[in-house]
Length: 129
Image (cartoon, rainbow, N blue to C red; front, side, top):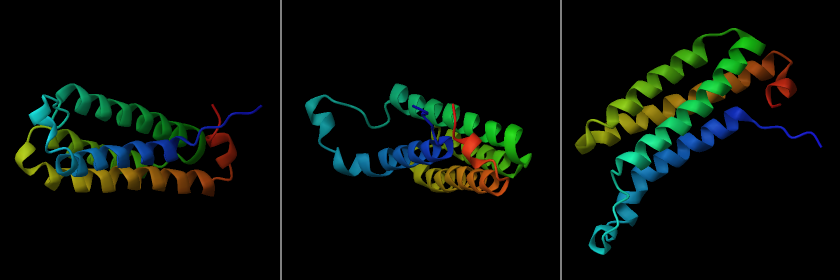
C-alpha cells in the first residue's frame, strides 16, 4: 500500500480550522466560561494550533520549493501570513483584523505551492512521504 499525504491540502485544512476556531468559537461558546471552561483565548491551545499550522506549512512549502519549483513566492506569501497570525496573538481586541488576511495569505501560499508543483509535472512525488 502506497500512502500519500497532500501536505498543501493538510496545510489549507489546518489554516481553515484555526480560522474557524478563532472566528466562530467565541460566538458558539459564549456560555462556556459560566461552566468554568475557557477555550477562548486559551494560550496553550492557540499557540499549539499556530505551531501545527507552521510545521505543516513549512514542510509542504519547503518540500515544494526544494523538489519541484524553486519559487520563493509561496514561501513569501506564507511568511507574511504568519506575521499576521502571530500579530493577532498580541492584539485580542482587534484579532479579526489580523486573522482574516493571515488565513487568506496562508491558504493562498499553499494553493500557489500546489499549483507550482502541479505545473512542474512532479506532483505525484510531491504528495508522497
